[in-house]
Length: 164
Image (cartoon, rainbow, N blue to C red; front, side, top):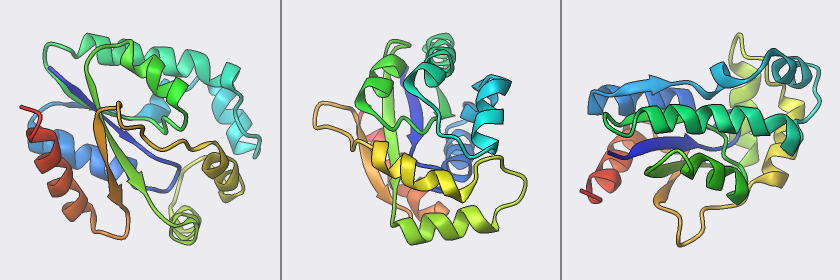
C-alpha cells in the first residue's frame, strides 16, 4: 500500500490535514515531531535551524515508520523540505506527497497564534529558503493552505484515490 506524507513548512497545517486524512482512510497517523531526538527539539526551540546532519536520523526514523506501514498504509507528516529528504522517505516504500503550500504571511500568522509548539516564527524563513517544490517525477500534489482543512483533505483524498 501507499503511505501519504503530508509535507510543508511549519504552520502549513500538516497535523490537522494529516489527522483528517488518516481518519478518512481508516489508517494509522504519525506526527513527524515525535520522531525528532530531543537535541533537535532543543535546537529549534532555541531558534537554531536544523542542519542536514541533524535531520538525517529523523528522516531515517520516518522512513522506518513508512516501511512498517507498507502493508496497511498510513499517513505521516514531515516538512520534507528538500528533494533529498524526500528521497530518504521514499526508501521506506511507496509514498504519495500532499504538499501544503502557502504565503509566508499566512504561515507566520498561524505560527504566532498556535499554542504549545516548539517551532518559533523566526525559523520560518530558513524553512522557506530550503523548500524545494515537488518535481514532476515525485508522486503527489500541491494544496493551497488558503483553502479550509476540510477542502484540502477532500482534494487530497480525491487526488490520492486517482492512484488506485
